[in-house]
View 1 (cartoon, one colour):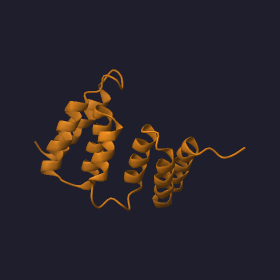
View 2 (cartoon, one colour):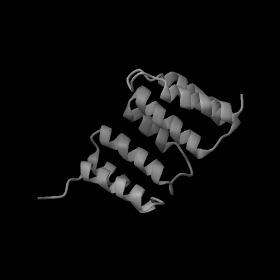
View 3 (cartoon, helix red, strand yellow):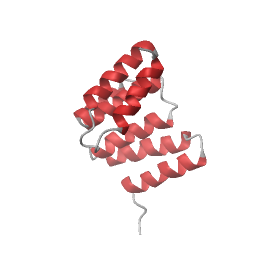
View 4 (cartoon, helix red, strand yellow):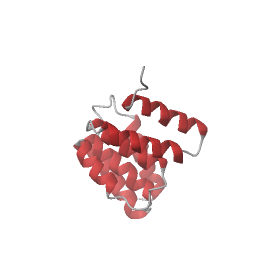
Amino acid sequence: MGPYQLQAHLASAHSTTTSWADTDWDRIIELYDLLGSVAANPVVVLNRAIAITERDRPQHGLAALEAIVGMERSHLWHAALADNLRRLDRTAEAAGELEIAASLAPTEGEGRLLLSRLLDVRPVPA
């Protein structure tokens, strides 16, 4: 199976589930493993780590994210770290990662979205 077929299977796994809770995360991780074996790149590893978060809980997803090398300049990697840290109630660390993510965002819209998430973990004082 080639990368495009695997990507199609991933899209199908995400889009045909009846609910988030019913998502087959085992299958999705398996597909990312296969995709990584034929078309390795950091984004595949990042997406696999996010799927690990959903299947195995944030502490395992955080460990998978922290093991990725070479994404330090990626706003998506920092945003994923922030999400896991927030889920683990490590809000100060999550806020720091969101600040980095927002500063690295390639578009104004993505930067605004990340800054709005920052308000969720560090509300503006009244």
